[in-house]
Length: 155
Length: 155
Image (cartoon, rainbow over all chains, first blue to last red; front, side, top):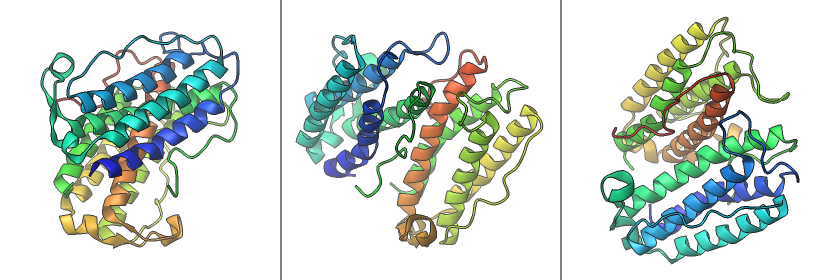
């Protein structure tokens, strides 16, 4: 898979994540389906910061930290952030070369060994699908109706 | 990705699905997190029959129906079924050749057009990750503690 094929295969899912976030109702930022779960706000933020962090790691050749975790006071702010960081992540992924996918990234602090860019990107995509699946349940439990299919068709 | 690489990349997730199913408590087959959701039993069965159906389609060159949907009277029976159909799916995937991944499968009745085996297999894997993510929430909401990480490490 080259870098443009990866970008498309990731967007098949990220576009659905964004669509689902845009449907979330106001007043449910702190919703959690069981006592120890991530809140709705934290689940979405975790998904977004991880995607950005992994794409940056492949670009820069080393895994940095995920940066300051944003805190939101309204679902409107969360939605705005999701659109912004999605554009930044997309921009980073668009700037990658096929060579970046083959190069080893310094991930020893996180994974105990260095990993090729393509392995990190594949993990990032799996992580997106995993948490998006969970977000569908959060969305349904907070009253969202007619959510999209889990993957974007016809892209 | 050749057929043995695919098998491994799918097992990274299926092995976790099986591990998680094995932790589910008795008496919760009909649990659902919101009114219109699939029951726990149906979610697991859907995941299993879809995986088997897609792997068979690639082997046989055409998508059949998903077969009779099994009904379970205990979580023990569901767990037994999950182990059995996982072995059958693994056996089918093991028997595939690299040529099977390139060949077009008759999927026109389901997707409106024929698709290469590798596209079907990739969709099957994404579908597994999506519903496994949801199964983590079902598991937590029915009292499972210390579930595994979402992907098998060190395989």
